[in-house]
Amino acid sequence: MTARANSARWRPLSEWAAERGGQLRHARDGRGFVIDLPRTLPGLTRIEWGPSQRSYIEGFELRMRCELKVNPDMQMMLIERKLMERLESSVFEAYTDTLRTRVDTDTPEEMRWLVMFPKQSQIESKLVRQRFGAVGINRELIMAWLDKDLSERLAQATQDVLIEGRPFVLLSLRGNVYLRTSMPEPSLGEVEALTRVLDAAAGSAQAVHQRIGDGGPWPTTTSVAWHSRPSEGDYGAPV
Image 1: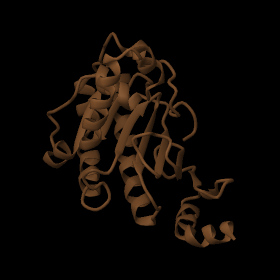
Image 2: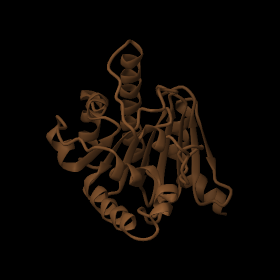
Image 3: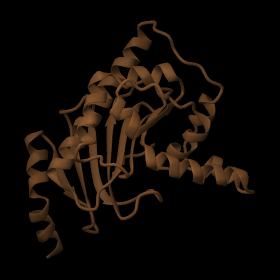
């Protein structure tokens, strides 16, 4: 009965995926699904909805990954501002206690980066600047990534999907782009809107990668090697 009920419940998403040459598959426990889109975004894309894999998101979440194979040192993150403030408080407290080593090895990138990477406060879009924080290996790189198209997609999403206080992170990491947000119940409208954000983020990351490949300036930082280590998170594997 659960499988049949979920098939009816997720039919709009299944049809949407099929129209794009993809397929929706149910999780074995019936508590989520995976959509693989082979050819619609700049790279192979996986969309997964299910129980949260992050302590800062309660209940269920939506995870997306677009495989790009861009320079793996392009390490950048956009994060919902209230979530950023909450995670900053948590990670700084952890860094001051006796478990500092565990913070280094066990904490996911989105928390470690808040400590180690510079913030970019001069985001061109006022709405994006008010609603999100941006950190990364280099401020110039972040500015290039947050181009007009990505900023517009983010601004549009804040009107009805990425409402204030909803946990959201967008990362360029290990050559791919990842998106993660809370989602108690999946809806086609929200998945479509967030896919457009991922599409813009992936396209912009490719453009930045191309610029670097053509001899443009490349950021340097002593923390690149430290941050390139695999973490205990799930960004190195399918989402």
